[in-house]
Length: 273
Image 1 (cartoon, rainbow, N blue to C red):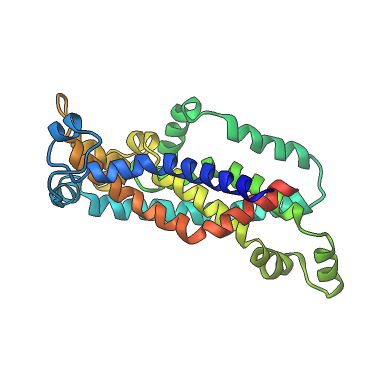
Image 2: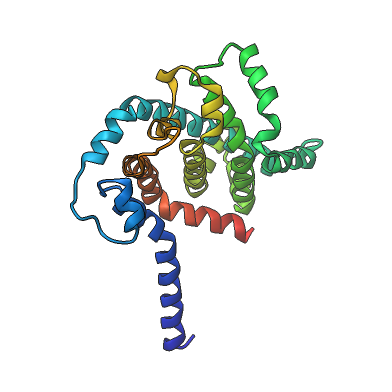
C-alpha cells in the first residue's frame, strides 16, 4: 500500500473512532450543565460553568453506592461462572469425541438467537420455584445462562485453533485430561478468557429488563434500575441522569482498557479458525 493510501486509511479509522466516541463525550459534557433548559437550548455547547453538583445528586438521589455494590456482585459472580462453565464446555466440545456432539453445539446456537422476552414468564416461575426470586441470585443465574452460549462458542473456536500436537505431547508425558486442561490449555487461552470476561461484564452490567422485573426489594436493585430515580411522570432531571450514566460507564471502560489487547487476540484467533 502506498504512503497516501496508508494515510487515508488512518484518517478513515480516526473519523470512525470519533463517531463512536462522540456520544460518550456529549454525555459527559452535558452532565456538567446546570439544567434541562441548558441541555435542550444549547445541546452542543460547553457548559457555562463546570460543577459537580449533578454527580453529587446522582450519587445521593440515585443511591448509587448501594446499587454499585449489588451490580459488582452480580457482574463479578456471573462473569466468573460464565468463564468457568464456558471454558470447560468449550474444551469438551472442541476436543472430546462423544455422540451428539454437533447437536449439543447447535443447541448453543439456538440459545444465542432466542430473544429474552420469549422466556421471561417461565423463567420467573423457575426462580420462584427455587426460592431465589427477589435476590441477587435471581439475576446471577439468568445472566450466567444468557451469556453461556456466546462464551462456549468462543472457547470452542479458540481451542479448535490450537494445534493438536499440544494435546498429543501432553499425553506422551503422562498428563491427564484435567491437568492438561487446567495447567496447559487455560493459560494458553487467556485471550479467549479475556474476551468472554469483557462480553459477560458488558451484557450483565448494562442489563435492565430482568433487573427491573425480578428484583422488587429496593436494597437489591442494580445500577441501571437505579437510574429510574431521575425520571418522573412529567419531568426528567437530565443533567443528573447523564451524570449517573457517566459514572456507570466508567467501570466497563476500565475493564475494556485492561483486557483490550487480549480481546483482539482472542477474536482474531477464533476468526482465523
